[in-house]
Structures are given as C-alpha cells and as structure tokens.
Image (tube, rainbow, N blue to C red; front, side, top):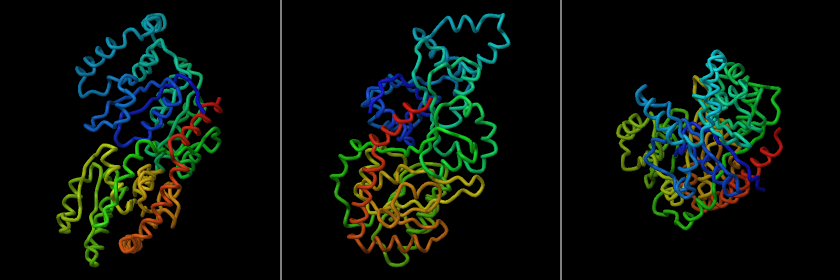
Length: 416
C-alpha cells in the first residue's frame, strides 16, 4: 500500500542511535512514494550516523530547530542562520500579520508556538503531521488550539518515556489538547496501550504498531557464522538501571563461579551507569569475560549479534517511576539474528517474543532461573539453533518494516 502524501514528522532528536525505529519508519514511508520532511528539536550528538540516514540523503529532508543551544548568544546566532537558510520557505504574510500591533495580545501567544514550531511559518503545507512522543504532540496540539496549524491529519506515536506509569495523573491534564485535536494514536505494545487508556479511558482511534526492523539492513549480516568456540552473551541498550546491565554482569559472574568459564558478555551501549559497571567488572575480577563496546553503528551491532549465542535483557520495573521496557526493538533484532532471548517479564517484552519457543521469559526477581536458562543454552547448541530459527521466522512475519508500514498506512487512511 502507498499513500503519496506530504508528511511532516516531528521528533526530539534526529538521527538518534537509540531510536532506529523512527529512521526505519521514515525510510519505509519514502520507499512508498511519500514526501517526508523531518522537523527535529535537536541534532544528534552521536558521532555514529546510521547508513540509512546517508543512503536516503535525509540531511536534506531534515529541519533542525535552533533554540536548544547553551547560551542566548548561540540561540540568536543559530536562529539567524536558520532564517537565512530557509528564507525562501517562509510565508512572510504570516510574519507581517504576527507583527501587527492591533493583534498584539493574541499574537504574543502565537509567537511562542511559532517559536516552538517555526516550520508552521513555512509556505509549504502537509497532508499529515506525525509526532513522535507525547511532549512533541503537545506542542502541535497547542498550535491547533490557537488555530495556526491546519494540516488535515495529526497522528501521535507514544513510545514509553511519554507514558511513564507513575505520571498517569499528570498526563490526564497535560495531554488534554492532544486528545482534542489529534486524529489517531499509536503505541508499540499492549502494555503501553493499557497505560494510555488509564490516561484517557474514552480514547478512540488508537492502534498497536510495534517498532519494526528493516530486513534489507540486517540481512547482509546473516552470512556471519556463529562463534562456536565461545558462548557469547549480548546485552544491548542504554546503560540505565531499569534495563539491568549490572544484573547481566552479576549473572555472568555466577555462571563463571559454577565452572562455565568459556563465555563472554558483550555490553553494547552507553549511559549513566558506565563508570559503575566498569568498577563492578573490576571488583568481580571478570574483566577477561566482559567487553564494553560503547555506542556502535547499526552495522557493528548487527555483526556482533550475528556471531553471538544468546541475548540477555534482565530488566526491571524502575522503583520510583515504575517504568520498564515498552517493547525493545533490539529483542526483535536479536531474534532476526537467530539468537535465543532470555528476558524479564516486565513491561511489553512478552509481546515481542514467543515464550519457550524463541525466548525464555523470566520473572525479573527470579535470578536463579536466569542462571539456569543461561547454563541450559550454554550446554545445548542444538537448542540454541532451534530457538534461533524460530525467532528468525517469527520476527520476519510480525516485525518487518513493510508489515509495520502497512499498519501505519492503514492508520493514516482511516483516521479522520
């Protein structure tokens, strides 16, 4: 299915190493013949740029806001560069009207919205505005509320950080204008859907659309042979408490102490816990068994996954916020590379695997069972192979970007 529409995608950071699902979705929309423009509040500070971003020349399709600078001087400087760069795109009739002193009070409120969304001052209109994350949707909803945004359709995708369980009461007020003006909403799992319905039980036009993987991007790495000489465990994600990287390290230590020493834990990602994790590895005296890769390009992540044995995600529900993994696209990527997954039964993880067929789903507090399943897979390469094949077939059927893209097009076409 194709749409051939002009679509404005509003995101917080683009391109982001940790949000490849957005990049996959945008490129799928382009593949279908849509004209996509990306408006982002921040340019990625990552030194790694995914090849898809380059292949689709998305730099030319991206408008980056100027306001998130470290000083007022830099904001003014970048703002001047922004207006100079896009001067041919601006609708100066709107700007002249905004400066009309007769409408000073009303225009003062509008100025704030235009400052948040300067793309609304452009001559070009869009058929659809698709916002990622509730806080970006709020800015667009405020523009509709003030009558300065009139795009025919507005779609909002929630991803998890914008539906934290402990903030449901806050969202009920904060998202009021969103529920008034947006035409459709997507969430990536039943888990996130349930939180959304706690915020607004009367909500309609919501759809479950998982984050998808782009087969053509991963497939070249399938030729990589599994390393049969070592039991390679992969943890991939931001190094934050509720994803459980410290737990993964402690589990590896326990397995080594039980006599299963021919193993290696690959930790891919960066985050606030990095120093703590480095100290923990040294303290446990397992430096020879743990490799910290830091942030990597998609290609390098896929190379490690393709050669590895098991994917481990011993996440938890964070104590204060109760936040946990909403879906975890990395779990589907791991299954694509024929890796059995061992993961905690928290958040939306269970909706992206098949328990006991592609993965082992374990109650997060049951560390003994994590150890048991890791040892089971350590000792049984045939079981790893069988679960890996099951996982590969499962994600191709349920999570490939063309399948996910069909679902998104359905939302675009059926929300009014």
